[in-house]
Amino acid sequence: MSPPSIVSAEFYLGGELADASADASRDLSVAEREATFAGLVERHSRVMFRVAFSLLRNAQDAEDAVQEAFLKLYRGEAWRRMEDEKAFLARTVWRVALDRLPKRSERPIEADEEFASGAASPETSAVRGAQSALLRRMIDALPEELRQVLVLSAIEELNSREIAEMIEVPEGTVRTRLMRAKEELKRRYQGAKEVRR
Image 1 (cartoon, rainbow, N blue to C red):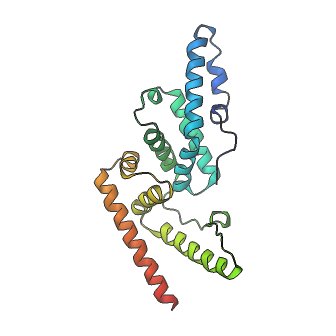
Image 2: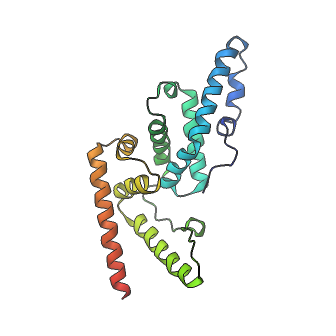
Image 3: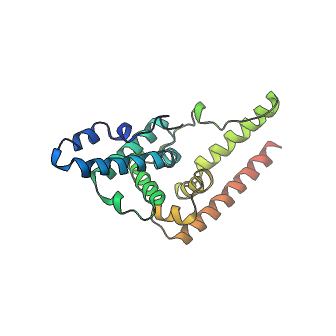
């Protein structure tokens, strides 16, 4: 669930950087551009991966979305005029990941996507694992508009302003959706606990 350990612009852009520097008349400006972009990749690739993974829930798909987002950014010039790098890049990869989502799929949770547990005993570990799996299924079952803001806020630790910019809705709407998601999750969790008794 993590991006490659050696993160470089070359990884995300393939031969794109080398091809761009072929023109000898622009070597200095191309070298500056490559260095600036490589720094951008190194600073933000992990955050972008986490954003893509939170939406796609598959490591390979998330890596592909990050690579596609970086390629689009490198080919354009908008990345040079960013005011808030983190929000801009998160929004970019979010849009790419949204385009890659199948229309309302009901994909089961894979074993390697389960929450890790640091329990001391096998019994405690089993209980926590069951609770984590139940919570994950409940989050996945939330309506998409509620699940998205909950994941971005709680797991990706983005604030409501960043989420609003990313999904292009007013900040108040993000806060309302987040509150509704938490209330719905709490209601469902309490209902599941009652059924178990």
